[in-house]
Image 1: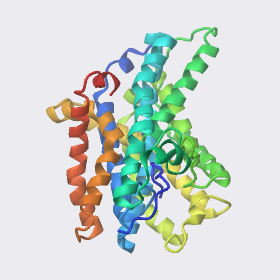
Image 2: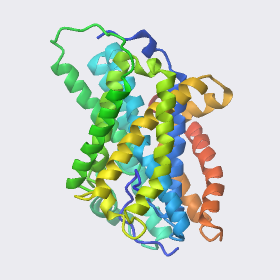
Image 3: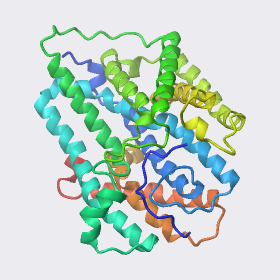
Length: 399
């Protein structure tokens, strides 16, 4: 239902002990990052053609079927993909801190996260929005009147523009982790004990609590609300905080490797059922005429959606980890190209898909067909450009 990137306010267009197993490189986790990066690109691309969220540019040609399929696709993605991103990112945080200590860990985080965050937020995004205003929306302003005055007051956040909200969030969570480790450093160190993966009863309880937490947060701020200064969509942060913490615990307990196959298969099946239940839930709740009750407030639709979202999130996190660990854990030539380029591809993808979508805006095709054709071009292009960017001097140290 919601985009993970808040669009600028643009005019409407005319058209301690380290567990040894967990410290070794987990190739299936790298492949999950690639998969999630591709999903992010597709998520934002379908918004352009299906009008199911906010983005830099949308075509506004969607029909009911396109809008419904786009809403289903975006809702399923939004339910889990950024939470899973945070979980697998958090999984390696404790080991990194243990090896490097607080100062080297902070330095590494500031280089890997802080530099892309600053460059995109304060250079790339303002220039990109300025181009959009002039070329796409026909709003022409002297650049120095636009930046820093109008951009930061009207068109963009202070920091965390576009998809870099995720990098900003990961940096904030990492800094909070450092504070927590420093505050608890006098506590007697406990040996790391590998434990069995949580039972289904514990997983069900976690999913229920996560759903209730999401519902309660959305009584305060509904989905679609963003803290504009930092571009953080707080209605989703109950999930993001919880899964980051789960990732930290999972490292110490080695859960990514101890996940039983039968548990992975079971929750994958549950996820498929929940994905199929999206349309009946939305139709029963009247989303075809008004989807506002699903976004927050004292409505049964809001509670139902929050529980659907939390169960799907938990199920997909477990199911995706199972599938990739079981079937996609081997190296290959394609993997060797995609994995190093995924981070750069994630950062630059709005700058790639938006101009291309605008360039073919006059091509008369059914929106979903156009989405498929453009996706076949922009997804590989993002990774190719990401690989080229990493060849720039010092870029590979950051990206």
